[in-house]
Length: 452
Image (tube, rainbow, N blue to C red):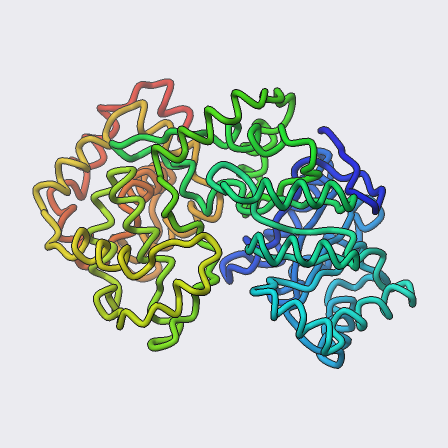
C-alpha cells in the first residue's frame, strides 16, 4: 500500500480509504463492519471515513481495537454553532473515542451556504473543539467546484473532500488551488457514482472502464492524497486492493485519452448519484431523481434491458416531473435533469417483454458470464439474493440446499431482483430438477467446484 502526505496536516494516509457511505445502508450492521475494518487495517488501509448521518455507531467496536492505527474522518451538516457543538459531542460518543483526526463541515452547497455556516458559528465550534484536543484538523466537503475554491481561499481548512476522477471535468481547477494552499485532498465519487464501471459484467453493452483504470486515473494526480471507496464486504475490499496495489502512474497524455474516452461514452450530462438534487421540491424523497437517471444510464449505455421492468416497479414514475427546474439549479454537474427525466420515461415506460426476458436468461447460462457474475457479487449482494430467492421459491421455514443457493445467487445477480410474482411466472419453465439440471449441464466440473 502506498501512503501520501495529507497536505498541511502532515498525516500519512493510504492512497485508498474506506468510504463510510456504504455503512449507511440498513442491511450493513455492526457485525459486518467489525469484519471489514480490521481486514482493511491489516492490509494497509489506515484512512476511515464516516459522518454523523452515516450511523457512526456501526464503527464503535472495530475502532476500539484499531484506533491507534486509524486516521478517522467524520463530518456534520450542522449549520450553526450550537448544533455543530452537539454534532461533535455525539460523534465522539458514538465512535467511543477521545478525539477525531479530521472533522468536516459536510456538503457545502453554494457560496452563500459557506458564508452562512461560518457566520452562524459552525466553523467556530470545530475550531474550539480543536483547541480542546477533540479534533486534530478541520475540513469540509462539497461537490461544487466554485464553492470548493472559495472555501479553500478562506485558508480556514486543512482538508477538502471532493469529487474527482474520470468524468469530473471541472475538478482539476480546484485541485490546483488546493495545491497552492497546501490543502489535503480526499477524492470521492471516483467511480462516477457507479456509472463508470459495470461491476456485474452482465450487460450486452459492456463496460469501458475497470476499477483499476479509474483508480489509476485518480492516483496519477499527485495532488490527491487518498481516494475513498465505499466497501460493504471483505470481497469488495479484496477487489479494490488488487486495483490499487502496484498501481502504475499514468502520463498526462494517457489521462487525457481516458478522459476523452469517458466523455465519448457517457457524455458530460450523466448523473454521478451525489443526490444534491434531492429531495424533489414538489414530491419529496419518493420522487427518486437519481434512481431515474441511474436506470436510464444503465439501460442506454450498458444495454441493461432488465431496467425496463425495474422502472415499472417504481410507485412514482419520472413523468410526474413538474418541470420546475429547481433540481437543475442544485446539480453541481449541470445535468439537464428535466430533459433526462423525459428521456427516462420515454425509454423505460414499456411493457416488459417475456420472450426477451427468457432469451436474456438463456444468455446468462454461459460459463464465462456465470463465473464473472459469482466472482463479482459481494457479500451484501449475496445476502440480498438469498433473502429474495428463499422468499420466492421456498415455503416458510425451508431453505435451499447449498447448490441451489449458488444457482439462486447467479440468477438473481443477473435479473436485478424482479418483482416476486413476475419472477415466479417467468421462471416457471426452469423451476425444479430440470431447471437445476439445465444449469449444471452448462457448468464445467472445474466451475462447479468454484461456486459450490
